[in-house]
Length: 128
Image (cartoon, rainbow, N blue to C red; front, top):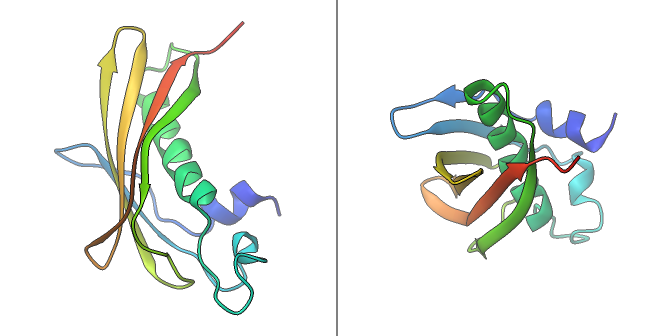
């Protein structure tokens, strides 16, 4: 099983809300992202936290703009504010806005109401 399969097996369906989108994750102790990060004190790597926002945002963008071929262009305003441990429920919420040819996903991750991370993802036309 590849990493994306592990991630998709750790979440519920993407929900559209009045303010954007939401999805929850629970990563088990066996999740390979915890391997070596850190021995005896596993925490979810920041790259995985941004990847779940990227995958979920791309899913929403594909639904909202099916004719556009989009790719992640950049990650900005990234802040990691608390560690995420195995078996903690991680709630992702994001909203989408359009600026020119780009789409911006403003993401927030929380655990028990406490902000774990915030970041923005910029998606633009896929390079040919």
